[in-house]
Length: 452
Image 1 (tube, rainbow, N blue to C red):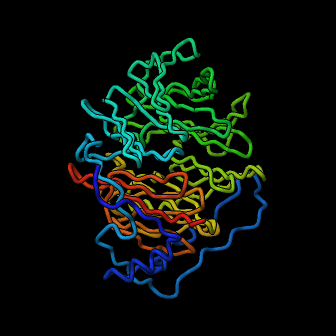
Image 2 (image 1 turned 45 degrees about the horizontal axis):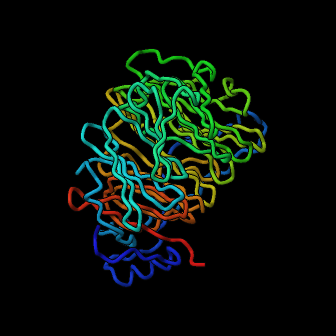
Image 3 (image 1 turned 60 degrees about the vertical axis):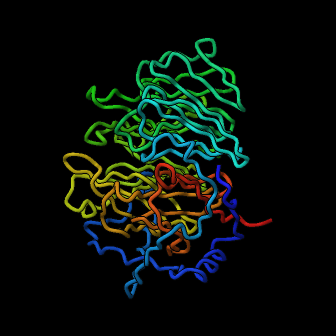
């Protein structure tokens, strides 16, 4: 570990911005959003209610009377604070990584692209380390409580790491072999388990969705969910899980991925504790690439042609069509990341899919009072990295074109400039990033939590 000074925390981001601007040649000020791309009403229709067609139409998004001042990119880590060198914990010297920040204060670093002779690592502030061998034949995820779950190829057992101890669960705990390899090479995200409000672990595979209640595993097959098999053997079924604390329901979205990108799917389903519903939902049998729940408990779903919102209190569905003009000449839209800010605006990173794949370009889309606009026009997806985050405290963050922003009150605050190998938010609202290659691999943190 490094002997550099440990991280410090700020009482708030706006105060930190003032401190940063006083010692930097770059002025960190709130910058208005660029004017949206003008689209004709025929291309950008008003959203339509699927359950309540008599609802009042949404009001249009605001327009800007003048062009916004350009954001000058920062050239360093800005408001982030150095934490530690992790060169001895990162086995892949260059590749992207998955970061997990559970409630116990640790940070897990897993390689996103798997091959032989790699390791997964657990970092703690007091220099505690755990390094595990990992390869293309091992899938690993970490839950919110800090437990690691490992499945080896063949899936005959599942291994759990908890507080320094390993246990193996097999048929005696209700686990059955799963010959379908869990990893899907072309999926946009790594494999991940989810913990619900009751502490149960939900684990997706290609052939089923599994839940562990602390004693036994229960297995829900895709046939039980009402999901059809992919049309071709080359396609893999990727399942996204979201839990609704208000109702106790668990939602599952499905997308079929192949070498050319998303190739259909079966929409969404939800489990009420007894039965699965959702087969007749207005989302339809489509690739669900986004499934998330906002702070108010509403469910947001991204499919190729629209963003859907389900409001459990009203039992109402609303569709916000993605404009064809925003495809910029390519075949279809592929929503990838979605975040809802404190003001209720919805931000979406959308990939553009052509004839060969979906790795070409992406754009930033915003829904304000139900009206959509393109905020940032297409740019290359892979370089530099792009990502949206929503914190439990309502904070929203955007990484775009190498600049990291806070989204607040209809404006973007530039915080730093970097091209990270991995990013995550912890339960306390802190943003963690892994930057640097080989011996320069380092952890940095942005701490905007309020002092008590």
